[in-house]
Image (cartoon, rainbow, N blue to C red; front, side, top):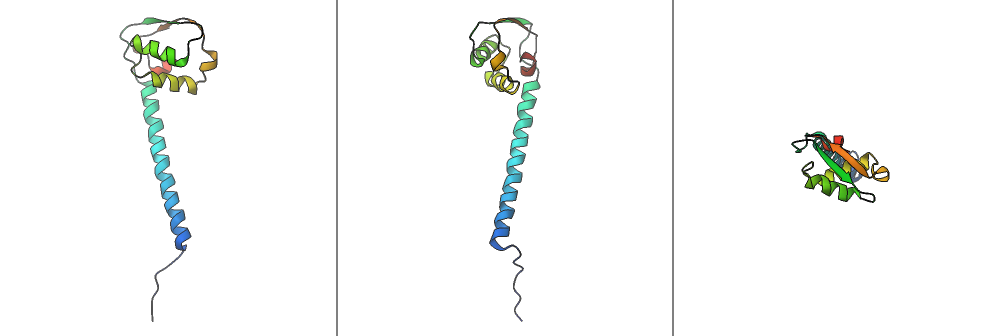
Length: 110
């Protein structure tokens, strides 16, 4: 008597299993990425003493991020841009003078 291996699911089952495994790996990578970005957004910033930031009318998020980096409040202005977009800050960005506390995190600055 010949014994044939169990072929439940066949090629479709194997493909579905592979796609499920791939989705789990992608979800893990995405989750870790979100965790790392959130950790960096809430970490204490490099600014050693309270400083003033002046935003002129018409300044973009890129320009404000550059000013914050130049004054030593940020290490990476892209994080400011990410946090500002998450909080939907761009449409309501206002001109004026703003106090940035020492060691303010990116989220605190936003």
